[in-house]
Each structure stands twice: as C-alpha cells, then as structure tokens.
Image 1 (cartoon, helix red, strand yellow):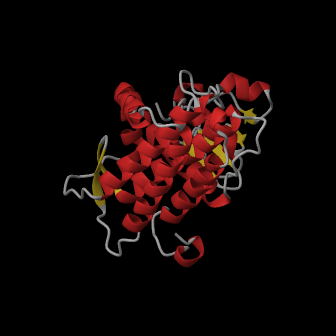
Image 2: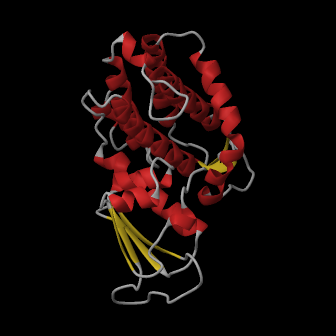
Length: 267
C-alpha cells in the first residue's frame, strides 16, 4: 500500500486514519516479543491486548463500511455517548480477538486488516450513512471516531513503553482529532458561555453551568486553552481536569472556565 500514490484521493479523513494507523503498525512491528506482555496505561490491559483492540477496531470499521443503511444517522455527539453501555462487549470482543496470538502475530494481522481497509476506503462512490456498532452514523463521522481512537491509542502505547521512542502523532490526524472532539463538546453542551481553544486546530463555544453571559464579540468572558494532546487526554478520560490544571497544560480564565462537568466526552 503506497501512501504517496493514494494521498489526497480518499475523502472524509480516510487518509488521516490510514496514515496514523500505519504509523502505529510500524511502531508495534519493531517491538520485541517481551514488550507485548508489559502493562499498558489502560487498567487491566497489557500491550498485546491493546494491539488486539486496534485490530478489532479496524475490523469493525471494515464491517460497518460494508453495511450501508437508509436509517437516519445518529449525530456524532450522541453516538459516542453509547460507548459506555457497550464497554463490556468491547472488552469481550478485544479478548476474543487477542485469543492466544502472540504480539508479533497480532501486528501481522493488523497490517493485513489495514490493507483491506485501504481497499474499502478507495471506493469511488461510498455510502453516506452506514450501520456502525452503535447504530446508523454518517460515514465521515465514523471515520472521525476511528481517527480519535487511533490517535489516543498511539499516545497510550507511547506512555505504556516510555523507554522507547514515542509514536509520532501526525499533524493531519491530530488536527482532525482535535476538531472532532471540539465539535463533540459543542454538540453535547450547546451554548456560548465558554470558549475552548485548542491551537492551532480548533476553537468552539459551549455552554456549561448556568446560562451566564454569552460571547458575541471581543474577548469572551470564560476561556479555556490547552494543547491538542492534553485536550485528547481530557476528552477520553486519560487525565482529569484538576491534574491537567496542576501541570499547567490548561489555561483557564473566568468563573465558568471549568470543563469538569463535560468530561470525559467519550465514555
């Protein structure tokens, strides 16, 4: 599969997804067997289990892309709220995917799955709405959720094996991830009392707490600003608001500049 030949030919974030997925696959392919038994930063999962989860996530996406539907799509901000009720099922399917396969064989399987996914994403006339694991969803939206998943698991893996060179978070996937998460925040908490900035990728307004003042022009009364990786970790429950504030990775001004009631966005 050649990135150079296919770059820019797939709409809706497909290239961004494949680029980051290939980056993860290449990094995993360089790990020795013993590293796969190391605990990951995700409770109860080792690196091998996390690798199996990446395989399963891409397999599930392929199955969804093969299932067009005429049902009205669930908005992405509501779709991701269906993750928590399905958490046990996701964990079970991850364990089934892992089976007794050693880590290197799971990496080989991931590579094969990515080849199949690339072929599916090259469809010149893809369906607009497909049946995802949590219901009908726009094709572009499910790709956006998978970009988030691959980017956050890239970060998870890097933090799980800190003695190794971290997986590069590519600008395209990280930018799409930030914009999607910002849009989910605004969709789940509509309003204009707080402005959230993730430079250089996104800035949105949302409503938290009581209505309070809204922002129409000039400097908004409540501003939260953070970097893309910190926002990713906050949105996915990898860190807490208080911890991010304590490290200085979040800058907040205004009485309502506190995202705690909205976090995590994906649950």
